[in-house]
Amino acid sequence: MSVPLYQHKAEFFKTLGHPARIRVLELLSEREQAVAELLPEVGIEAAHLSQQLAILRRTGLVASRRDGATVLYRLTTPEVADLLAVARSILGTLLTDRAELLDELRGDTGTASPGA
Image 1 (cartoon, rainbow, N blue to C red):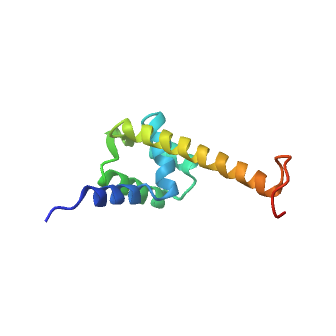
Image 2: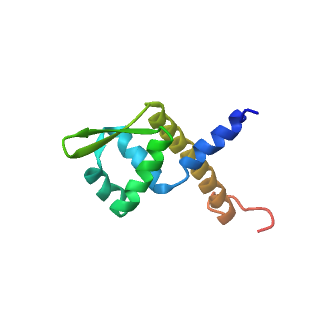
């Protein structure tokens, strides 16, 4: 029996469900980078970063190559950067909507709220 597409999608989004992995993908969407460049930007220990990169490699979201003693990481597809940009846009909309609702609840809109 084959696995339904929605289940594969759920596994894909689980892979994205870690802040360090999201940050790594954001950084790699800018350009190919070495671990030494990623470490200060991600803000986790080297061993933990290596684990997160291994997960991203295993799922096929990033690839690595050697340049002498340095291992460089890159996104395997530009659509990953597009996905992150769409997620940022969605979050911006949600947060704006929530801020407007919060303003209404606080009575910051200049109109009295019923029942307040």
